[in-house]
Length: 65
Image (cartoon, rainbow, N blue to C red; front, top):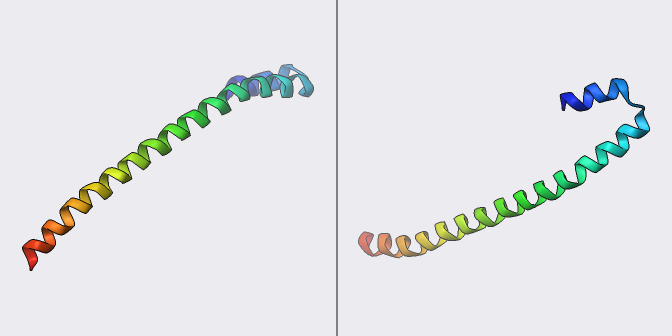
């Protein structure tokens, strides 16, 4: 971010916008992939917890009754 601020003092605004978008597109793609991966891992984590609960809850109920 500091480099962009430094560029802002030297380069006209139109050039900055052009450069900024060029850098932002790969970043956006990267963040989307990261977010997607994070969602998948969270989904798996939740599924794992649900699976564990589906095993544990009947066991707990059987012990309590």
